[in-house]
Amino acid sequence: MFKVLKVDHIGIAVKDIDEAAKFWEGVLGLKIVAREEVAAQKVITAFIPSGDSEIELLQSTAEDGPIAKFIEAKGEGIQHIALKVDNIEEALAELKEQGVRLIDEKPRGGAGGAQIAFLHPKATGGVLLELCQRD
Ligand code: ZN
Image (cartoon, rainbow, N blue to C red; front, side):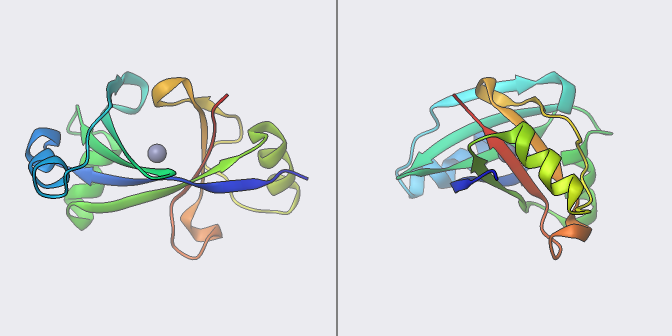
């Protein structure tokens, strides 16, 4: 049985990371430590550590990207919550076996070399849930 280890990060959709940084860095005094384009997901991500978890800012690089579509439908704001698991392959296999609707049946590459996979919001009470494993 896989284990959920912690809330790894909270993903926030923004129109402009530099604009958002004025609040997260300028007002709250946090620091963006990693900025990276994830071409496969048409986003630029910026990670802001806070204690044992992080905030992930997500800016779309294309009008038809998932983040652009999210902002168009719901405006800027929390887009997903990511849980760190000890074994993502095992987690996906077990969840599938339990009939949990998955967006990704296999892990894919996320920012910072993480392995990630999304569960469908219909299976989680309306939350887009990301599983991630970094090691
Ligand atoms: Zn994420």
